[in-house]
Length: 188
Image 1 (tube, rainbow, N blue to C red):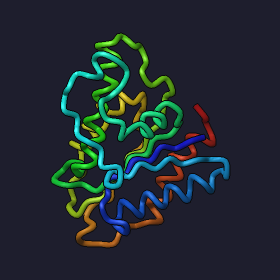
Image 2 (image 1 turned 180 degrees about the horizontal axis):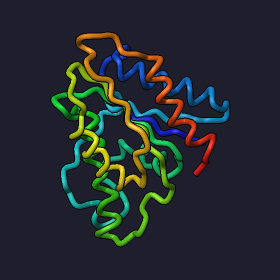
Image 3 (image 1 turned 135 degrees about the horizontal axis):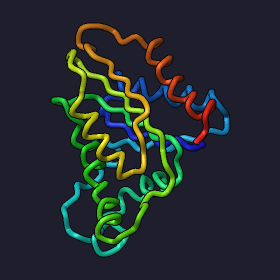
Image 4 (image 1 turned 120 degrees about the vertical axis):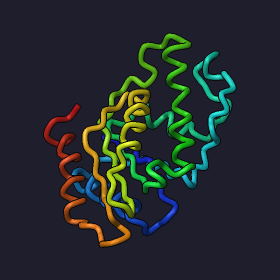
């Protein structure tokens, strides 16, 4: 089983980066066969969608910077999104990746492809933020993009109040294990 992990943290040792590392460790622990494809939005530096119309004409994008992501979306069974919260939304590099999902919308509705990404994925959303407010706007925004990626949000972990206290990483690992159990107890 392959997990596609898309990260949105610029901080190597930030809470969302540590959560991502926890997921990777637990995913590999569940089965040595499990693979992980990591897309770091800051390293990938996806170009923003410029609404050029290329994807309305053929199944492609004028940019090739997300070709690895495109291939992974078509083969992965698990999708993990891990990001800090910036003003109740995703950081700009991560948002650029979400905006580029327009390609799959156009493939489906302009080109008439019934299922641009045929393999369904179960998704986990992990966020961390300094404030106490749950990132509901981000969850809704992600749900819309997940539809285009043929993915269903199965579990969401929101670590709140990181400006005031240390996160409970035992709880986070427990929540991640519950997501991983979906694959070991009930494979899709």
